[in-house]
Image 1 (cartoon, rainbow, N blue to C red):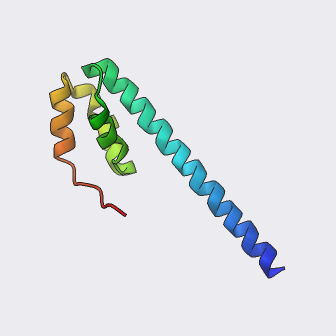
Image 2: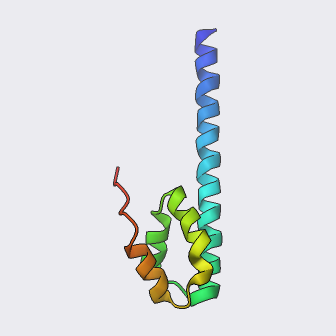
Length: 87
């Protein structure tokens, strides 16, 4: 019974993590699409920087992305963000 309960808890945590990752990837995809429309095609190195942003930073970016006129505005904003901690 203990093993079964532990398995169920592990399974739920795994599903929750997968769901969170899916939501994060979806949010990143939408932000990148909006930025491409707003400032022009974003190059892969900048896309990689966006993918490394925390959830909080992605939310901040969502709030300000419509104020950007150029890719330089986006790059300036990204440079002002704290660098992610590499695991």
